[in-house]
Image (cartoon, rainbow, N blue to C red; front, side, top):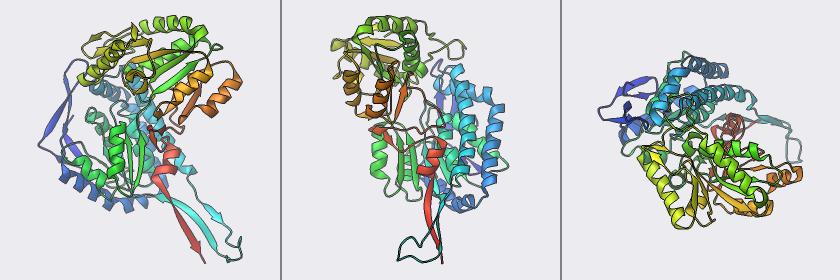
Length: 472
């Protein structure tokens, strides 16, 4: 990767560089420019100057822009999948899936813009009115600041920048420092497209003073952030008068009812708990199981978990690759040891080879244990025996988080109750809470955040605003 910082459609070399090492084998896989406060101010000014030009760019051009990027990304699928695996250790099979989903997200964003429309009003509806042409229209907000995490370093970038750009905004992207090249390659496709409006998209990397300068400045009218609750709270406190969309942590849970297909539930729960080494906001963390099927489900889940291949992320058969860094491994070990000290026991896992952390199932846990009530963001899942749906519902809803929950059952009335009664932004019936389709609204309640992703919903909620017009 050439260590350059993209400012709009130009490149600026930086002297200070930082290396990114592979979580799997420690190789230097990319470098990026360490930016500073002055870089942040410069990129803000560029975006502000570009905003009006981008807004006035015809919609067909903006849509063709996204479709052009999606087509070129298809041609670079294998290259970019390997970059994702290099930088964050995601197994190559799932890196390819992420590229495919990114392509879909970009196409969905282009198509969603066709449905962003206004409405006319009859101003003679009240005695105080008079005959006129009154309507509202949706227009871009101006400048969008997008801040993205490491766990889906390509598709989560697309979820923010694609709808924001097709809406006619200028966008500043600050990606995770763990995957700078992944973001760079996608931004490069956008910037080098023949349909790209000048300076519509800028990329800036982390460095001293960058976050503060970007977040507190009045130029961005929207900040879209995916990451931790603590950073989300800090952004809310410092952002000032602007729209803030936050996709924060989760503590995803499911309930396995006596009427559930136990084999199917166990197979899907192993996927939901351990995909991407549990480093997913909607990773399955709590499994509440009806007491009458607890033993059979426990046995099936342990068998499914032990069948998952842990190893090189470059092997097509690998399901679990390395965690992102040593700090993540140390934190996972602390979660488990703390629970063991309080009386819990691991049914499998709790072994580590470098950053390869074996998928771990915990039993005999209590609701007070941090491993249950906090977000672990690791390949760890806890089994909890319950008397039935009512107890499971109460335990699930006591969480400070509310991103996604699910239930496995063959009882339609129970499924309908779960949809109404579980407190989360998304409910899944007969599959894992880790399930997400990119065209759906996605986002949580409580400490899990505010706002929705999903191209159409992001366009309506975050990246466009209403302007009222009267022609007399």
